[in-house]
Image 1 (cartoon, rainbow, N blue to C red):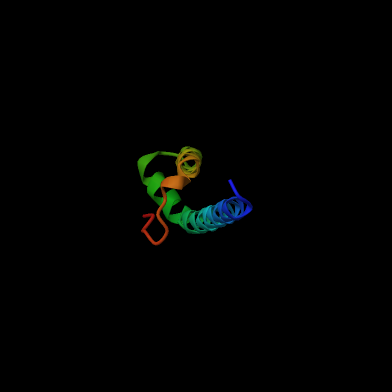
Image 2: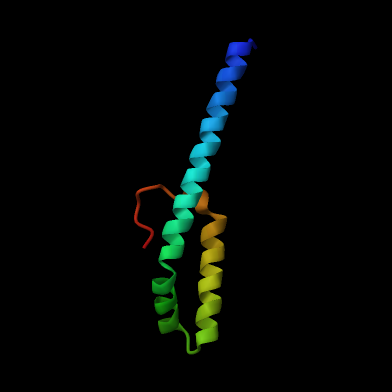
Length: 77
């Protein structure tokens, strides 16, 4: 592989990493912006505030583990 090819691959990888970082930040911003709504929904399903908080925590843990499936510009609701 020549220097030009290696440089192109390095540039492509750097762009991919930058895109992933931007998408992750956008996901975090959008997801965390919905925290109050997620809590209100959770509160309707369980009898106590503590259980609702646990449910929200579990929900966000699952969401953040699979953030790569997020498509920017789609509705997270």
